[in-house]
Image (tube, rainbow, N blue to C red; front, top):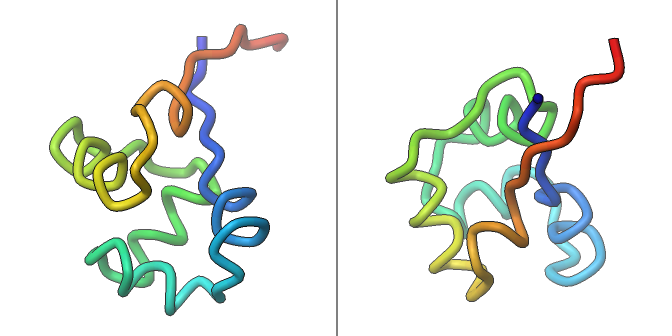
Length: 70
């Protein structure tokens, strides 16, 4: 199983922000946010919860498991 997220979709469709603005809004470093969005790093539980609160969305609407097809 792999962790997926809806950060990019949320950023582009709801908040209409670029990566830098969205990272500042979420109070995370821009480079670190980019890693989360590109799925190269999974945020810690603490960061995931903070993102959930900032976006006013349940964690499982932002992050979820998906079967790895490889």
